[in-house]
Length: 364
Ligand code: PMP
Image (cartoon, rainbow, N blue to C red; front, side):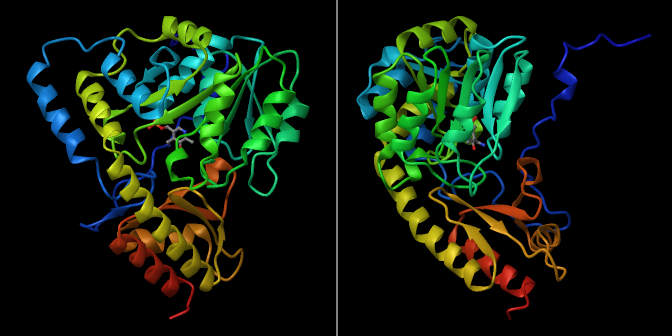
């Protein structure tokens, strides 16, 4: 007997592999593999989550009004331009399923976030991968790849796993060069960490056009990755189209309540930004000083490149760090065979990685 055949393309998808959580034989670990915040969620979000537990027999509000309204109030947006998702991952998929089908193409960049390719393929479309330049999104390469079949373009700004960023003028140039029928998705999962407020200009791009979408998440700076909350800001026609494809109750009630409380607590966000800026600088400098190359990052993670020779490869470093309970992320699937991505963590975790890599590099 034969199993039913999945649609063409489905078995070509390389399944997403999440960051590791455990180090075999080590009781206490620091998980620095998924760009989670070391500061945890806002106490107000935790309280709202607990309160929501008293009404679990009821369906959530399918339109997540309380969350949209809180987001709109804090960011000065119209709630009608907001759509919430079960993590921004879900929204990336819904956008593909709304705008792509067999025969259509979606453009992604060389080191881009893997979910784009997965969802383009899952929707029946063909991912077209273009080169980056110095681990940064290359606007000219994207524009050169556009055909009459292109339906969607994904860039993350800042990008994961590189931590790099393209200024808003480049994003504007990208948009200006795209046909109006192509949806440009600006994935701003790490927007809060960028000191320059260019992403507010990304919001302007969404507001002033019919074909630009910005996606955001509560998983990173808000410390709510476990609840799965994302949102997108988009023109009305896009919101209304994607809303037809969305599952009716895609966000659960505790997530709606906690997300609304979290976004009102901007003091927690500011504290997380400060923690990150200080440690991003310290980690980047310390690792550079021991002979490692670190791609300059504007996010809450760094991409660390290891020497090609001398028994000090990324794979060996990964095993060495794991043995000490320090869990980083291998990024071979993103096209970096000799690098590891490290999330900026607590003081103890960051100093632990610096000390361990100093030893690994024979600098001690
Ligand atoms: N976009 C980028 C660039 C990311 O790094 C991530 C998290 N890995 C996401 C989107 C998805 O985040 P979430 O689904 O948790 O909102």
